Length: 421
Ligand SMILES: Cc1cc2nc3c(=O)[nH]c(=O)nc-3n(C[C@H](O)[C@H](O)[C@H](O)COP(=O)(O)OP(=O)(O)OC[C@H]3O[C@@H](n4cnc5c(N)ncnc54)[C@H](O)[C@@H]3O)c2cc1C
Image 1 (spheres, protein in one colour):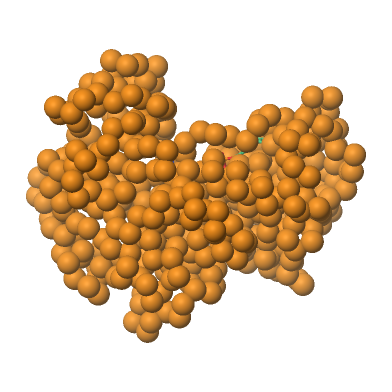
Image 2 (cartoon, helix red, strand yellow):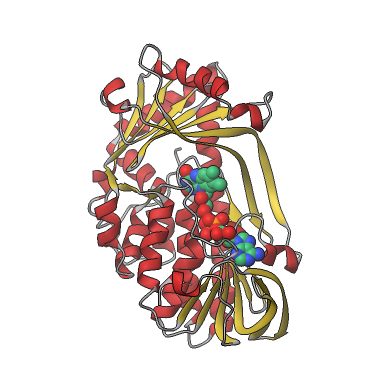
């Protein structure tokens, strides 16, 4: 069954083990894990086609190990770019710190970040789901509501091109993104904050590796007035500029505004073709609970965070894979309680903490605090032990190992979360 075969069609079956609201990267990952475990799964996706926007584009080592276990890794490696290092630069282009993933080669089979567009990951997933006989993906259908009917049963209301209907499931998984209908229907608070700054995200066709010799495929540029990221993805270079208060979103995406920002970055180099433009508002929010009886929240529906560090999508994929295990546990109720608790703790104490720290590091104001922090990061990158600890955390290996998320290679004794950073 291919996804196009069910696009826009109403479902004939009305009873599933699991109904997944949202056919984004996280919902589709959950569907694959559950389909492989023989569960009857319905994925309900409101859009008529899979999303093709550039959003997340980094896959960390534990996620690559999970992708290996799902048989996705060969396609991902074939389509992605390996980033063996990442850099922290200052606005003059001077290197503050470089972190080399090869120091993790005894801790993971994938000691690098893989740069691959989120939409390509989804395409690979959809290809695999086409072979899963127990999984159905319904595009152009929207989950509009649900009613819990028992500890292991839920009725889900769906609106499709032919009208509204209800299906029943053993559970409902809300993987329907940051504005999750499922989370809102539950009345679960999405606690946290919204940053004052936004990001202007551009895809450009400049050869930045030629303009800035020695830069990595992943570069964070610290600047008190306008921090930015330069990311090489297979399709092009992506630039993510901080935009502080002032111009409304409509103005930020105009040619004039974009040219002004690019001019400062590129200096004398020719103006590129702008392949995509988006304004992106950034939050740190975590749902008060990830489980409400037979209704579970994963991915952006459960937590959103700053993109500095590339942890958002990765942690959503980790939610999906661990949820798959909990749902197929012989004692699912107990397993789901502990899953929900664990994943929320990771979202708060790992993902939010790390991404907020990274965001602050990039945007520190000129002065002593900034100089001290940049020096600290420089020192960490030069000290093999501290750099390794930093990298284990930045690449999510520390948190993945604490939860037995991946088998990987054995941890060396002495590996632990950095306390110095
Ligand atoms: C502009 C942008 C740039 C980003 N860049 C980065 C980055 O650089 N690094 C990073 O780590 N993360 C980044 N992110 C975050 C990352 O894209 C998300 O973490 C990731 O998409 C989460 O996947 P998801 O499947 O949980 O949610 P989504 O990708 O949001 O998928 C949710 C799906 O649910 C569908 N849906 C919504 N409501 C319903 C409903 N009621 N019924 C049925 N379907 C529904 C939507 O159509 C969508 O397809 C970015 C996000 C944005 C918006």
